[in-house]
Image (tube, rainbow, N blue to C red):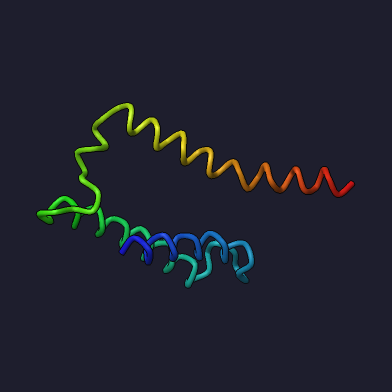
Length: 91
C-alpha cells in the first residue's frame, strides 16, 4: 500500500506539469486521490494489525517526529542543491 501510494503521488506530481490541462487533468487527479487513499489505508491498517510494520505510537515521541521532519526536509533539499551545483559547475 505504501509503495502504491507513494508511487501514485509521485506520478501525479511528476505528470501534472506535462499534462494537457496541467494538474486539472483527470488522470493526474485520479493518481493524486488514489495515492492519498492508499497511504491513508496503510495508516489505518497499521493501527489495527497486531504486529505493525511501523508502530504508530512512535510518532508521539517529539524527538523522533522532529528527526523524521528534519530528514524529510534534507532529502527534499538535496535534489535542488544538486541541480544548482551542476548548473553552477557547467558555466
